[in-house]
Image 1 (cartoon, rainbow, N blue to C red):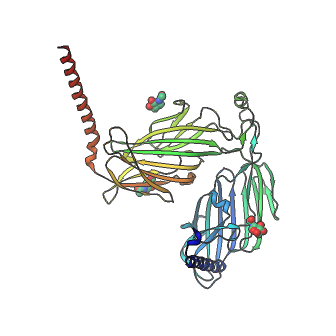
Image 2 (cartoon, rainbow, N blue to C red):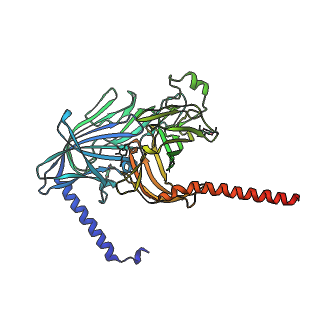
Length: 468
Ligand SMILES: *[C@@H]1O[C@H](CO)[C@@H](O)[C@H](O)[C@H]1NC(C)=O
Ligand SMILES: *[C@@H]1O[C@H](CO)[C@@H](O)[C@H](O)[C@H]1NC(C)=O
Ligand SMILES: *[C@@H]1O[C@H](CO)[C@@H](O)[C@H](O)[C@H]1NC(C)=O
């Protein structure tokens, strides 16, 4: 196959690549980072990194974007990248959010991938700008030991570089790493490094050329829940008869060090809080919309009553317990269902269409969702739906048939991999609706009753005729 492809075409493509790369390289050389400060928060299994970069343009042409570099492993686990330009200090500090995108550039040395931050106004020669970048990584803590018994604490490895991976020259930089407890088994020393309490400070380091890298390995204790939802399907059914019904199917796993040996409930219950099953979790917390009603929680066996619901004006909280505490590698499959009032979530748009405004993401606190599927089931008779989601998702349409349906309902399916709590933000599904369909369901009901009536009459008639 490949041999049959026209060679000039490939040549042309490579030329474009070469041109693009050369072009980006020249702009890479124009910028440099005067100061980089990185704060890495390891207190949860969702790693949060805050990066402050002071960038200066040394070139002659204005720069309209600044690039971030990530290792191939980081890119695979990157859940979110945000950036903002800041100015001023303290209380007068202002933030202007900037767009960040995966850059369409060839990989850098060792497979480095790039993201580009689009500046609001190009940075002219000699100008500086301060950028604040925030990104989150999932599945980046590696349990070691891989297996632990019920009485052991969980230890993990975290790998990074003491020096910021960047396509630019970095004049000065410091990295602060915050661990969840004071128990740090070991860490790579790259002088100067300082440890105090739950903080490790790498640097300050002077002048490093582009793509410098200095691997560090940190081995530390973490017993916070590794709530991983391997798969979550949320079905949001809109009924013009007054409510939005939500059904959420979870396949949850404890993503930490695997549990070894037998589980002792007695030891678990009597020594709780004294280290037994320290990394396990028993309670789950889901943040649900305000005014939820008819909340239920069930698993394969049936309804589970050990749940507590607190409803509020802004949000409600559902605290619940799986049937058994979850240890590393253990799974739990369950369903949460609830209804919310239609008028809180369905609105009329200015173009005469209707739209649902609902929250994306997973209601479980501090959970990573490997695969999230959101299904918005529109009422019968809805047409040309469009989904507006503030980040990239996969979209498709399906049709769902349930009883009393005449033509079936349009289902907007949205899929997202590697979702974190920051993805729990509003999204909208716009659709047009033919009000005649409001009559479809009652008409169906009426016809069903009518048919039943006719059938009964016929039956009675036959019955009588036999007796005669
Ligand atoms: C990148 O590659 C070079 C040479 O192949 C190697 O010396 C260096 O350690 C690598 N850096 C990383 C971050 O793997
Ligand atoms: C479970 O609870 C829901 C809501 O309270 C209820 O509608 C349903 O009938 C219950 N199912 C069982 C099997 O008890
Ligand atoms: C959706 O709801 C949120 C609050 O729940 C609100 O801030 C936002 O403006 C709404 N979006 C639209 C398009 O109505």
